[in-house]
View 1 (cartoon, one colour):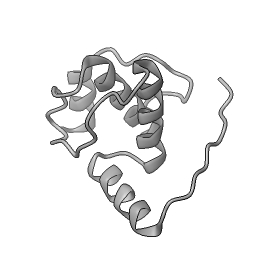
View 2: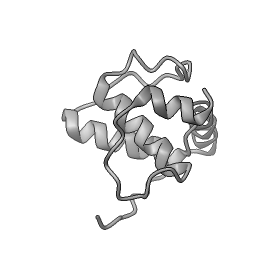
View 3: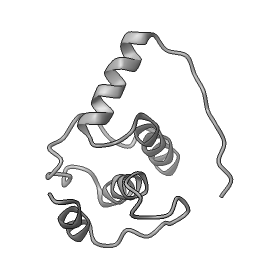
Length: 99
């Protein structure tokens, strides 16, 4: 799949806060935004409340969102190639990550 860039402007304080939230979630800011974009398209609207959950408790997200979060983390950590779409065992993934 061909990647494209999306850019937008925000103030420095908002970007700094977004970077901190992404880090709390164990994601890069880019991965966080990719999850938001993909889930927004899939749901045709905002798909979830954006909060920093306990990393061991993803169960307040629906299964599709959990899978997308796991996939982005796996790609970011190098466990999956960037074009992979398969994350099948959430518990095993976290066990492999040391959680």
